[in-house]
Structure formats: structure tokens, C-alpha cells
Figure 1 (spheres, helix red, strand yellow):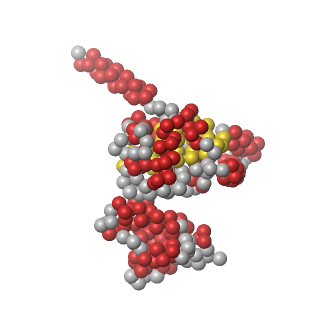
Figure 2 (cartoon, rainbow, N blue to C red):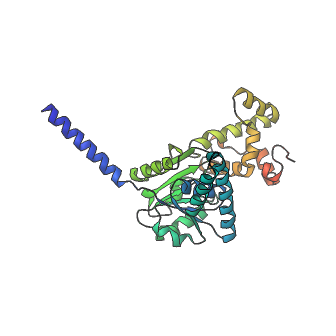
Figure 3 (cartoon, rainbow, N blue to C red):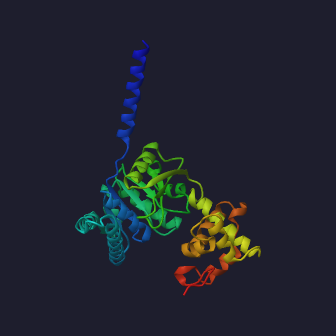
Length: 314
């Protein structure tokens, strides 16, 4: 009897697993909205791993620049990956590029896609309007995902009627090199959607980590307060920028000091994240405004991209 029971349990377990697996969406066709660095990077890694990709942005000029950037990036990858076989490298580049088409009309291309990944400006209103529109044209099975690093996924998902098929997919820059992807599950995200995105992330050759829809997710929730505490330490006169950077590089083994990293990321980006968090939780001491950061952003001293931030760049 015990043997029969064990066989029955195994049978039920295996059939349940098979059923759950069958329900998952196998992502083959991907639509990426936004042809900037992040969007182009996501399109590149998806196409390079056998997915059919449509890259969408507002103008043909932007898309032409995106495609050119993708090709340059692919050639760098190919040079390293196929060092001893340049012909295979050329074939890899051409095959990957042939898997990427472009469009300026998102609504016209989402009807046949399995996954829409949004990587546009960090503005809740703009993202919400985009997803509200796409929700009307996308197939019933299509999963929506946002690459936002600072906005709450739930707030964006609420602009659609597919909250159960909506999640966060937070990639890191530069996408072709960075292995991590944060998969963000809201209270409404279905297990089927979540597992489908975990599988998709792995298919890209990335390492997924899971997080609830909390401000900053994992990396930024730990990284940004660390950067801001470094600035507060400096503002209090406890240590110089240079010594703080040196201390964290030599003492903690970080490749860049906090002020170097702030300038590299962009002070406007950090301020945008902080302002959003402060709006959500004004009593949190970690989210309080930073006077020197506000001053530099107001003066358009945003870091390396403008030639000056906490440091000056020639």
C-alpha cells in the first residue's frame, strides 16, 4: 500500500509540475520600447540569444542611432567571443542584427509580441500613458514589464487591465556586460508571469534575483542611501570628498568611491530617485534632501556628462 501511495504522490507531483510548466509563457517575440542605452542594450541581448525583437522609439533618426550603437557593441562582443574565428564573429553580428526590426508605432507591433519591455523616461505619467495605450492593442497573453529603477511597478501596472501580467525587469548598464536582472513581483503579478520572466532572464544569459515592489528594489535601495550618506559625511565637514572616495576603494574594496560613482551615474539621476523616495516616505531619514546635490543639479553640474559634478572633468 505504501508503494502504491508513493507512486500516486509522484504521479500527481509530476503532472502538477508539468501543468504549471505548460502554463508559463515561453518568450520568443520581444518588443522593447525606448532606443536609448538601456533599451538598445536589452534589444541586443534578446536578439543575440535567439529572440525576435522589435525596437520602438519616436523617430527613425533615434532608431538609426540605436541600431548603429547595437552593431558597434555586437562587433566588440564578437571580437572577444570569436577571437580565433572572425568569420563566425561576422555571422553572429549579422544574424543578431537580422533579428532586430524597428518601428515608430508601438501600438502596431505589440499585437503579436510575447513580452513588452519599457525603457523610456523615468516619468510615471508618461509610462502610464504608454501602457494604457498598449494595453488596448496587445494580445491577451502578452506580458508587460518596466525597466524603471526608481518608480513603483504597482503604480505603472495600475494604468492597465493586466496587473497580473505586469512586473518589473530591471537591467543594469551596460546591459550586454552586466549579468544581474532584478525581477520585481507586485502583489498582483501572477506566479505564471513571474516564472515566465525568470525563465526569460535566464535565456538571456543573465542572473535573475527576485524582489518585492519596494522603493529602489535591491541594488538601488542599498546603493543610493550609501551614496547619500557619503555626501552627508562630506557636508558635515567630517571628511573630504577625496578621502571618502579613497577610504571606500582601499578599505571596502569598491572599484569607485561614492563621489566618483555619483558623477558617473549623473547627479540628476540620483536626485530624481531621491525626490521620488522622499515623496513616498518623507519621514525616512535616509530619504532627506541633500543641499549640495540640489545646488549642483540646479547649476546643471550633473557629473561627467556635463564636465563637472562633485569633481571637475576636462
